[in-house]
Length: 73
Image (cartoon, rainbow, N blue to C red; front, side):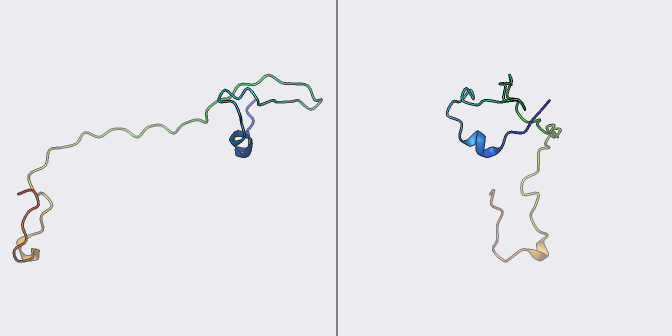
């Protein structure tokens, strides 16, 4: 069974291993527990990059400002 622990309780932990955290059942008895990280979203697939020509994003000559040059040379 998984139970959420309030963020405020986690923020007040004094021990990095949560040694100061206690869990009790309905009758007040201590209950053994283990902390688990929340499930992570799957990593997005990697897409290979392509080599680009020099200044591939230059605007067409009609839209260029006079005297403007490519930043890469």
